[in-house]
Image 1 (cartoon, one colour):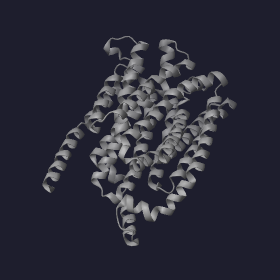
Image 2 (cartoon, helix red, strand yellow):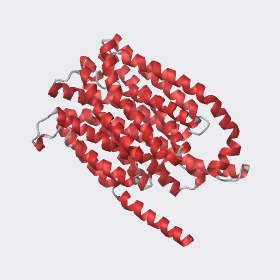
Image 3 (cartoon, rainbow, N blue to C red):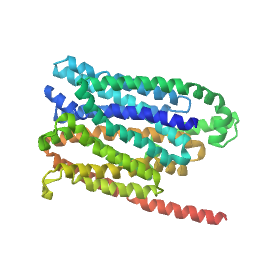
Length: 440
């Protein structure tokens, strides 16, 4: 029961992170136009957020252990709140350069803080909920998608009620409150865990004698494992490429989506958030669906990527398809993308940890989980960075519809890259069955 309440408290923090990151989408682009911030520069401002996330994920993944998880979770929420509190200062300036600097600073800090929180969260899931990792990942992603679903809607609502600064003040305060709650609730539990680590954790997790000699040797083995050891393994790297492509797609539309809807469908900025929520709503449904069924991870990832790739060609749709832009077509394509992106996004980390557990000995599993979480979140942040940048650059040369088609071609290539995993999984399974029969 304690772990259950801890799990859902962590996901409330995850929800606040996602809400805080997504409230900006409906109204910031049109507000930034007043300062002539658009195209590549607008994409860069959106993209600087995950730059902070990349740095944070790699640093936290390297230093993360069971003893400092709570401190890092609370620290992440506090850092994100600092980033949120930067935005209200934009209303006090009319200088374009200062507007850009404050925007970049706020986005960078909030991204650094969010990933400082999320990286330990994913590590905790792989360590404490190994027997139900698929379900727990699905629940966590439901909270994430629900945050991204409600973020634009809440952002539009708060913007209408209190103006530009109001959404950021609200979520900055909420981040501080969550940081305090996490610290107060988990500090005593963390101290008890530290006192018992030499007796219970080592024997249960590493399955070795608790002698000082073997402990010293295992610590040396853990330190020797690095990010490169994970990346060079094809099932891991190909899964990370899938996550990279998905995250690029998720954030690709942030800088241009509101402008496209306003220009083509006469949707005002305060209402765009409701249409942008189609992806997150469909993703939430997909996450709940995948948590209820048992499915081969590689097949689920590949099938999801096929539908995600197809949906991009109808997002505009491209003029070459001779279909005129319609809001129903665009929203339907968004919904298909959101629903079928859930299986690959949710299954990728469990597949990675499963592959690593088969490849490395049991004493290295905790280290692998921490590194995998750091690497996973770094790739997410990289995709979040590249999406707005690509969107801003392509907006300079191509229409929204044509840009969506190019994105679809990239997703097709990524899907084909992952294809060998379907045969690798079958081969490994046959080897395991043969080895089991020989033992009998």
